[in-house]
Image (cartoon, rainbow, N blue to C red):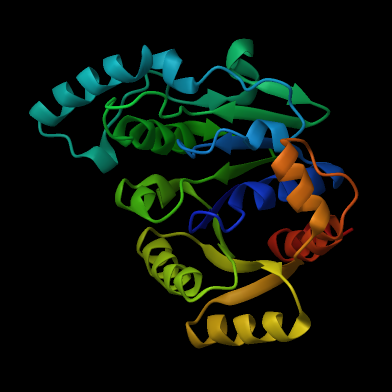
Length: 265
């Protein structure tokens, strides 16, 4: 199963990814977190790793070489959403070179690539690589991938969502976040995603949760959980560390119950 976590910038996608990964792992699954957000560099810290893995981008020679390969594909008539840049037909987690993956007690992390320098160009190569990596990623029956998507909706235009089973939209208390959730829901359906749900994040009161849930239902989006505003999450993200015991860890259990009904705790 491949679950992507989407939403506007600052909505708390990476925190939700980390909470999901821990809870799914606790239920006996092998979890692979795919960091495909080219601008956020702190996910590995929230997951409890000291160092990030080397980018998958380096497996294809780095961004410049991948750009050259893409240019060649464009000239031969390939469109970006269908472009192939990886030589493998199938990607198994156990075959990913050790420098490109981090492991910790049933949890693994890979990083597609990051924007590192001014004027280095767009993130298109990372989008192409993310799409093909997810298409070719083969998981066993107890394997689940949780993907931290880039903020916004650009990845839908690149076809990244075409291999996903579930899109989980992170919605914070703002009109912009609700509007983006509506757009993500439409694009996910157009991409053929089987299930699209929403989780409310950074919610300060039951009244706020009820209002947000009503707004989502008006837009045809099913909210499956509420993650309350949590001072421990705020402190952990500020300090760049894995959150300790917190309200959010309890809240995320209801989200996982809805995503994996056969694995209820």
